[in-house]
Length: 359
Image (cartoon, rainbow, N blue to C red; front, side, top):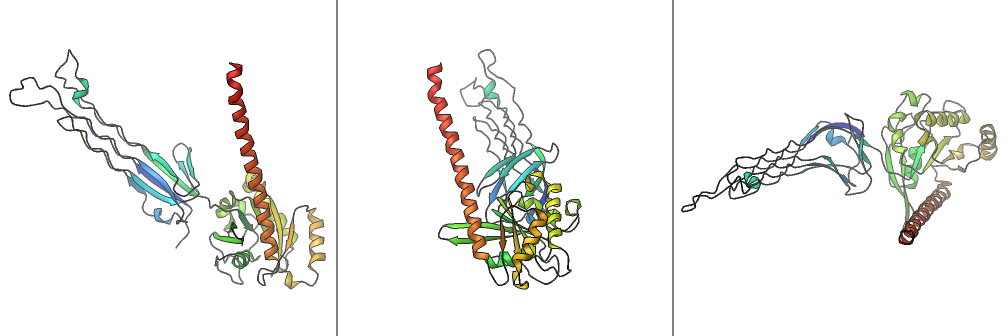
């Protein structure tokens, strides 16, 4: 299946049904009065997140979605049926933008989350609603309102805890294959990864995290070079970036230069992404006799003070230590977030308790 992470669609909500102009007609009832019912509301258009979807490819060709219009009212004060809603299923992590105004309508972050993107038209009113003591035979009705129409841009940002960065052939795909059940393509030529891959990494009972691999980043990616720019947005939600460094590049280039280029491209792409914690992961250590001395020189050049790990993804050396460290980092982030939430809740409760006393 082709990976599609951005599409433009048009949605049309249903029109509300018209009110009915009708009078009661029965034998021996000369002044039956009005009995025209209201119309039904028009159907709305919703987006709904589904965890079993991972691409927007279904909407590459089907781009128009319409909800049903409401039925018109009828005599005997019968209300018209409401128009059926239309539900568009999208992957978890989809953002919906109004293409006309540029407004972000919503972000679907959980399975089953729903977002209304086009409101159905309100129903028209039948003449029974306009009966008064002075106007006992009203001939007034109202028409149903048109439903909303919108042009939407749907943008998918994958939900992952950890994102892998690196030059082509750094070993990112090999790493995600080594620690999860994901099976991205691995080969000895650049850009074997053509679209993002997700893998669930388990580090014990009830402990796991999601790792995302994107195509390799090269110099000029922020300006459109290579494939990486197109998919960098998928790392925006991650809580940790792992920069996989090839210690023995096939072209003989300098790994320190690779690290600097990746950092520069992150800054150019987004300040938010550049602010995400980043660890260095030196890969293919089995190809060097003295990896620590080699890495120490690079770290000194960079004045690097962050965490550093040494692995051989192919031989799965050091990958277990790396995964446990990642899990600990994520648990610490979760603990801090939970503590902040509890404090906020406690502050609100204290304010509520003090409010009557101040009054």
